[in-house]
Image (tube, rainbow, N blue to C red; front, side, top):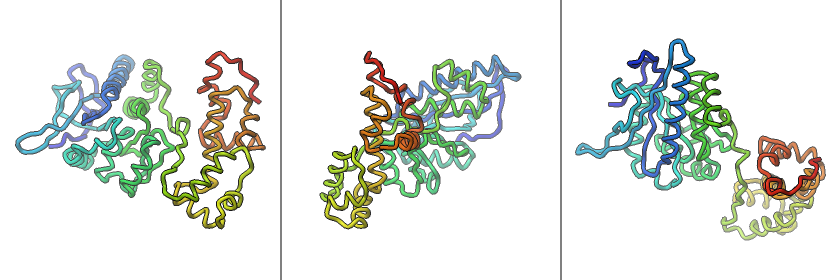
Length: 348
């Protein structure tokens, strides 16, 4: 029988249990995420008990598949409130570093998750854990995020899911997905905010030395060009494009370099790379600019011109749209050159 999410209840200390979060243990699950989430909810609960009237706590349990004579079943392996009846308000599927291995026990997991969802439990998944959730088909026709490196594979395996790799946490009320391998911190704080309120969340974030929940992962997303697509003409166009990023390039210029009609180039380029030629060119330029901001002390104006943007204000606008921060903010956060002791030049 699935533990159900009914109303709040009270533990033996008199604290109001605002919800039970079940952490799912599965093969190759990231153990640090399970322990880290447990710590975040403990810190938040201890503060809410001290500051709250009445005191409030989050109950945390862990669950895994156990093989029995009657087949696989879910069992509770730890519980902060073992004397109480289980009432799972949330289940969190933690990340994994091994995507193909996630499905080894998918049958029991998906049946359990579907049963919980029908009882009103909110389902949450982090990074590659979103693949486990997608296997239930509860994400069909829904928006979901995952690690940017896994987004294309998630969309390929589950075409009914609307994958948005730009988001760090996508809180869809009854289903929550989070992106990066360490996005369990963002998810944990998001749930604390939802269950115990923003003041408890901010105190918890400060105590664990974490920023409040991030909403975008575009700041960390790398551009990885697709090259193994089999279209030699388009691969030559890509080579030409990367070698001439500093030049003003148009679709017509690329078409002439490949001896293709512009419409043919556009169609084949999108088919081969997943991006239009214009989108690809912009992504390659922004990636090169990010590298320059990290590794050099060149001014923003110099970097802008080196990647083909003569209008620096336009470059700043495109850079911020792609990463969520200005070039100067990006350099302040990620510059290796300045940390290596190289004297910074003025950022114009």
